[in-house]
Length: 212
Image (tube, rainbow, N blue to C red):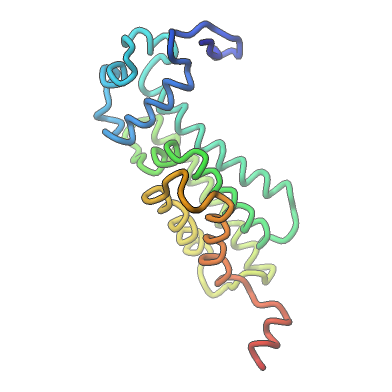
């Protein structure tokens, strides 16, 4: 197998695992045992490799953690960037961010699970938490924009709305299993139906219906 070096060039890996393969096994171990409790020796046993073989790909356990967290965070930040680039009503961009976040969670379930368990015990974790806070702040600002344009109800604080919405989305990691009855699209539809529809301001036609 061959893996990418830090400068982007290909380098030869150890038999059986490339960087991505080691990363996936490590993330699963971190989620099962906890990051602090998972030593390089534990990873070596789980991989069936020597510790030196792991060090061929990663300089430290912290580097493995950083790569795993960056994978999840970059995907979530990409969802925000795509929504910003799409333009249009803020409420529609909130919808797009929520749907995109569900897709990220489903496609990167193990990495997002690890991200949600970070507590800031190391410098790597503190940097990840700072990026999470920046993401949350951007989502809150988007909700505020939708409230200001009159497309989302404004009687609930925007930061509370953001926390409730992502509290629902983040809870998916506790029960979602790939290959179940719902794919990412259907799951995103359900999240929007339960969480966002109750926040949308009714259209003129809907107001007439409500008033009879």
